[in-house]
Amino acid sequence: MLENLTAQPADKILALMAKFKTDPRSDKIDLGVGVYKDASGTTPVMRAVKEAERRILADQSTKAYTGLAGDPAFGAAMRDLVLADSVPTERVAAVATPGGTGAIRQALELIKLAAPKATIWLSNPTWPNHPSIVKYLGMPMAEYRYFDQVTRGVDFAGMLTDLETVAAGDVVLLHGCCHNPTGANLTYDQMSQVIGIMQKKGAVPLVDIAYQGFGDGLEKDAQITRLIARSFENCLIAASCSKNFGVYRERTGILMAVAKDPDQQALTQQTLAFLNRQNYSFPPDHGARVVTTILTDPDLRADWEDELEETRKTMLVLRQQLADELKRLTNSDRFDFLADHRGMFSRLGTTPELVEKLREDHGIYMVGDSRMNIAGLNAETVPILAKAIVSAGI
Ligand code: PLP
Ligand code: TYF
Image (cartoon, rainbow, N blue to C red):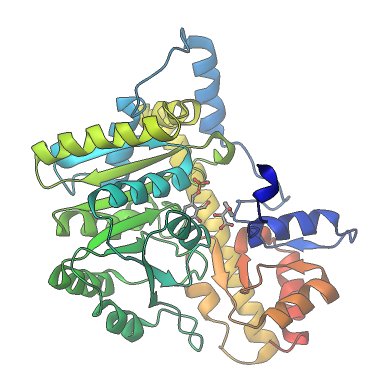
């Protein structure tokens, strides 16, 4: 049987991570995989997470199954965090999932049940796991223009033109904030225009929000998602806790589906629980319990928000330092986009050959599409990267 297997395409980001590990150079710089790192290069367990885990360890009296949708308290806490009061709670169905990826997978499976012919529209570029999963599920897929190679901002005109060709019932995947891999984001007003087109066309939004709190703050980063949620009869939202709670390996995420009314919500909720049962039965609980403990305890929540703010500001400072240093070295403002981008990533906008040159000549690792993880930098490595960018002729 197994002889029939053919090699599957590798994940380029994870392959780069493995390559970095084997590089013997002591001054190598890892700007690859999207994991937050502090100035010393470690990915810390957040203070509130440690404390929540201590409390769970002390107080938890059972490890019996929760529910197929996970603990309802997690659903409620995440609904409040992401959607606040943008839609009535009785319209929101929610299931805990293994990470944000699990939520995207379940969202696509739900679409497959409800609208098997719907085309899934993805931004060009997008997080590589989006097209990979859509293709694996055999769903029709299309791309809309997103990145302007010249300005390194959003190609908004191109995006609108492409979305004008979306058919009724098609699904448009939108990043809620901190676009991966580009770092370029729509303004609130631009998103209102996108929503206008989608409403006119009868398209359904699928929002992927994996970096709430990493861009402009917890509330601001959720604004676009909330606007989308209240603008459509139906909307799917896949949220990840991996980054903003730093619980990557715990696999903590949620899929929320906004239904038209409470009856449709009940049917959707039942279907989401069914889909969890088909794929992995009960979802993982530990990370979700940690997140719920933090979000429902005012002191822990305040401490978590403080640490998340520090994390966010650290990345903003690094962005500004890198843009300033490049301005100084090049005597031009052509790298100012680095300070305008938000989240963990910026796409530098150079060729795979020059990305490779940075790796070969300087031990600087970024993804082949020239995506850099800003959190991989610190005050010492910013000038080194800037110099390398200039000397590579980027
Ligand atoms: N969506 C995007 C755009 C991401 O970058 C990530 C990254 O990790 C995810 C979703 C989901 O991550 P996870 O499954 O680790 O929660
Ligand atoms: O884009 C990133 O780097 C993160 C982490 O298969 C990641 O989202 C990368 C690849 C992958 C899963 C997560």
